[in-house]
Amino acid sequence: LYFCDKMLFERLEKAVKKEEAHQRVARLRGQIPGISIFSDWFIRCQRVRKAVEEEKWSECLEETDALLKLFSSDARQDQVCDIDGCTTCGALDSRSWKFVPSSFSMKETNEKSKKEAEQLGNEIREYGLRSRREAALRLARIQSRDGRPGLAARTLAQVLVDSVDDASEIELWTQRANIFEKAKAQDEFGGGLLVEMHLEKAALLDSTDEEVVEALEITRRHNDKRAANFSNDSLVVTPINKVSSDLDYLQNAAKLCDEAEAFMLERFFASAYSKYNLALTHLSCLSHTDDPIRTAILNCHLNATACLSLCGQQNEEKIETHTAACLELDPQCIAALLRRADSRQRRGLLDGARADLNEVISYLRSRDDTVSIERAQARLQHIDFLQESGTAPPLISSITYE
Image 1 (tube, rainbow, N blue to C red):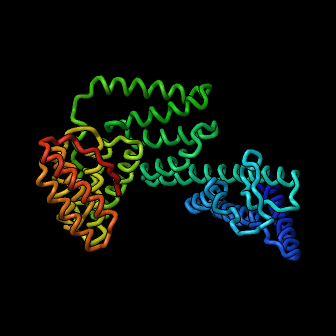
Image 2 (image 1 turned 90 degrees about the vertical axis):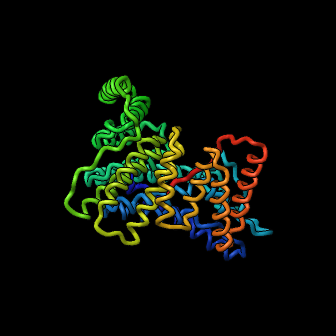
Image 3 (image 1 turned 180 degrees about the vertical axis):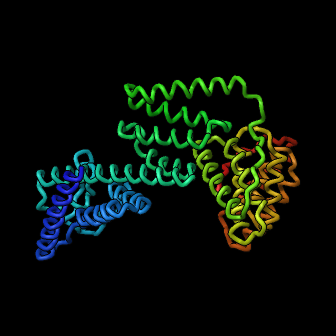
């Protein structure tokens, strides 16, 4: 791979020099030169290679993301020349010109040059995907080793979003399953399903991998047995063990928030809630609370209310408790007021919901947020309609977590 990458960089460097020569000729002829496509590719590839050589995996992920954006459809549209009377930029067939923006086209460009550019673009994109995958695996191993499995799982998830059907992604799926398993996620509600889901996707990509298939069967048997015996409330939080210092409490809370966010990304909201609630227990044990800690506590409460609203159970009293804690920390927390208004409307407490929305509107007016004010006023009108008609159907709202 190193030899192939070296050859790729040499070809790309030659393409850059050729492109610069074309642009000089265009300027001499009084024409508008095409956009520097190869130069952009070369600069981004160099940054990726530098990050890999220095083993800065987090930086490598950022650079590969920037490189791959050059091949997205949005990037191609943004780079189309819109100058009136331009004769050097012409539209190309998207089927044969897959990864090269149309603005690259020049009068002198022949079919052979187009094919060479397309092939080079495909190889560079593969280089970016391969580097991104390697960086994600290395960074996830480090994060998992440092005791932050939730953060490691999220790192791998960002890479898996793009190409889950590629057979080369098997290692990502299996490692992500191992991260949850090592974190003893199967002992939490929904955690075993996470492991099973990842192993199942890995097995679908390669059914001949005996180790993955065997691990999947074991996990399924474990989950079936647990489901048969599962009778406890999924939102019950186990007590924390006593630790010695504020630093221990903070580290434990950070790990729990990482794991909770990973569960939210997988839509296991009950498990995420238990993690956020346990993180709040750790944060409440601190001997002092400064502004960053208060902000962390506020975000935990907000995320807990989002989980309770989305996990499909009747948890309105718990939502009321968490939103009250949010408003105690920040009386002007609009997100908390909106979520409490949702909860009160679902319970038919329309006067309380109206009071919350009126308070939201007053805060938004001080910020001069016209769009949000209109949305809040529309919700007020909806509550008026419910009260006049004597019906209060459940409110389905889009809730985001912070």
